[in-house]
Image (cartoon, rainbow, N blue to C red; front, side, top):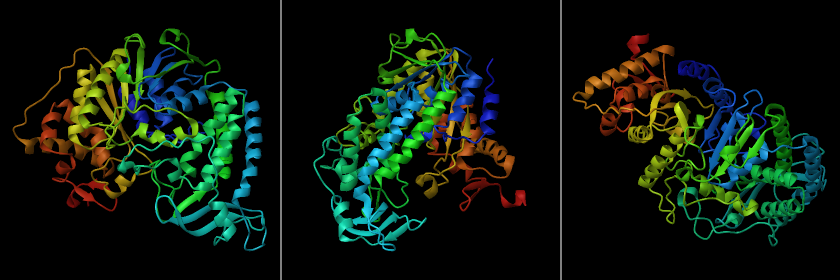
Length: 550
């Protein structure tokens, strides 16, 4: 008998992280903590069980399931080639020493392209100084206006130096030539992603950097060993977000957005070589921790032993029992799309021009403002319902689905629970997972936005009785909700909004059968919390009335 309270206690007592050598080797949006995944695998499955992620993304569920000490089997499903390429490249088996030697030699070879970053040192007059980054403005989205500063390194100093741009620096910065290995497909117009009509990948890279990337890809295309070729392509994929035009803090998560003022160009060679080292470390850790005899299979019927895995390139709403057998999965761990928060398929436009990895716009479950896509909220919920019916059919009776979720809107919660009930997935409980970094939305609006994630637990059941109580006295219900919130606040004297949501209040509302009624009365729960608790805007926390805790 699985004890979910033990799982929740273990999760509450660790610092969630996605930082290790494997996951440091690349960037992918909404990557979930691998150590949370480990707890779920350890507590909710046994040796030989099948673990499934229907929205695979960066593959944390799949990779962690294949650890040597677990001996589990894994299935991952995604519609785009980039996440599949990331996961299969990391999970492939290599002669790590051979690959490391080749990558290190390749890294040395491309240093020859640093001639385009060479600059004259203003202190020792050396012509061998190497530019790290350039700060510049643009007159419009296509043309460079003024180069403000150049940051560089020279053998005459251990520090990063800076100077104004000379004429030769400007000429090298504006290096241009025909591109032979990069496709210039026009972006899908979507102002929300800063993708505008007529733009392509050249609009978000400097002329020098895209020229150098084209040269690196040309060298990679001449590598005949398929495994090493994939490794080098993986490294290119991992640096694109860093070497496009970015802002000074380099903190934008929008892959197609670039600023107009204080733009930054970074040295492609320096970043590529650093990623080479990180990728080698990732392969070493995979070699140490993952099941030695791991094997990729081509159908679910071939999943016989621990360490075997299946990757499916198919929208989950199209998955049927011919692809994944009914009731063959013990545990599902997944992070489904949240309305229009992350438009993964449109984000893939950053990668396709360089690596020709295809993306699927038609089957993506998302809300998009792109005029050409016609992806509405109604479409999103309809596809989510179909998807979770299919997901549920793969799960054994009494098996668990652990799902990351993140929203303050009660109507979204109500729709989610309705979808799950219709899919024979019964809500059990949830736990808050705190993130170390806040998003911009969290910083600007901490009261109503949710920092971190809720991890929801659902159990496969064929006898769910959905409750929809009618509320006659909302004031009385509000008091009951705040009684739950009060207990949470008293545990440490304060609580954030997401802690109140995830550590008891939402669970109370669902179990009482009042989620539908509350979602029709309130947009979110902060309206209720404000009736009894004080909001400390400086600290972003709820506290009790001052007289109650002085």
